[in-house]
Image 1 (cartoon, rainbow, N blue to C red):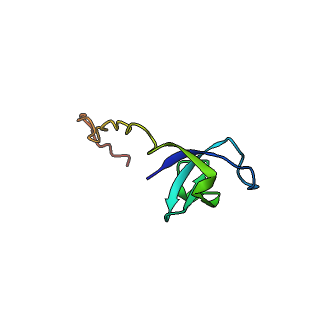
Image 2 (tube, rainbow, N blue to C red):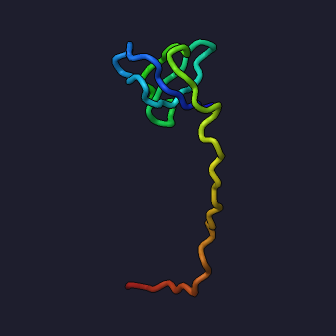
Length: 83
């Protein structure tokens, strides 16, 4: 589950007060914090008290995935002999 929140303190060198970050829950008292929507690119683990959660879950609406037609159109292909 991905959350989005604002940093409330500037006591950390890697985080900026007032900036929005992606938050990934880490136990009951901490978040992994990232500027990207990927837990693999986090900037560290910080206590929950240093963030105000803006949304309960991010993104707000699930993205609509369009179905991709993987079938190739039937064409009258012809194999050519080069030799």
